[in-house]
Image 1 (cartoon, rainbow, N blue to C red):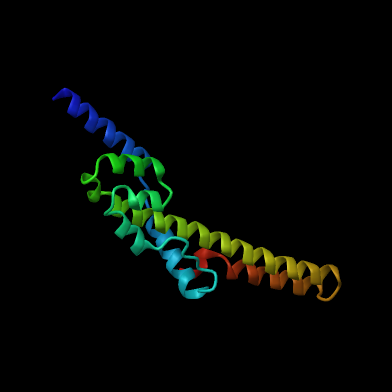
Image 2: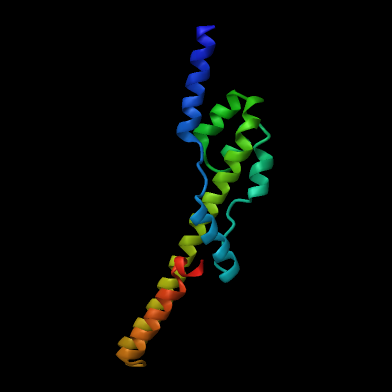
Length: 147
């Protein structure tokens, strides 16, 4: 009996250490705002619905969202893992999509800034125009302004 309790404690420790915690409410709102405001920059690298569905298979949701440690534990504890792995898959897919989308936003902002810097260095725009355009770009890509 003590052996079973030790196994369960070890399993719960491993799961809590490697589970995907998901996005906080602020990150979720930002992701939705980007999806609405910049649909071309929103990236769904991992499908949340597929991640949940795969979570019903032994370790599937975790493996799909690159949580290999949790996937291995879920595989060993299947069918009990259907209690947490679909949620872990959902959380992991949302995190992956959030960070992929924020990378896209940073790239787009950098590209726009590079363009106006080039125009300024080639004397196509004045310093005042450069500063105004730079402020507009900074404001455009400020995620807090989208909320």
